[in-house]
Image 1 (cartoon, rainbow, N blue to C red):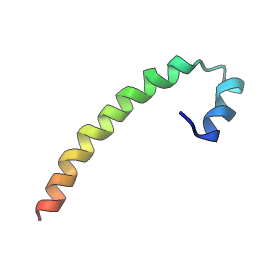
Image 2 (tube, helix red, strand yellow):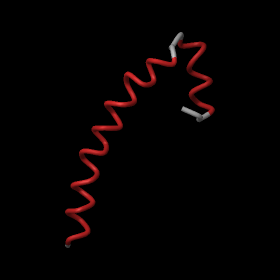
Image 3 (spheres, helix red, strand yellow):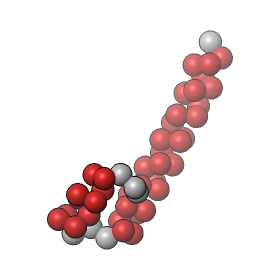
Image 4 (cartoon, helix red, strand yellow):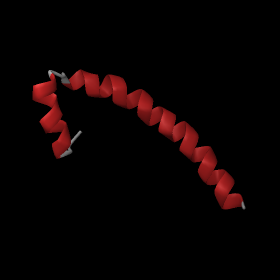
Length: 45
C-alpha cells in the first residue's frame, strides 16, 4: 500500500483504493497458503 509504485499506478490507471484490497487480499492469502507448507517441508529436511 505504501510503495511509491502504487502512487504512480493509482491515478493514471483510474484505480480506486478498494481495488488494491480486492486483488491484494486473495493474492496474499494464496501466497500464505503455499509458502507456509513449503517452509515446513523444506525445514524438516
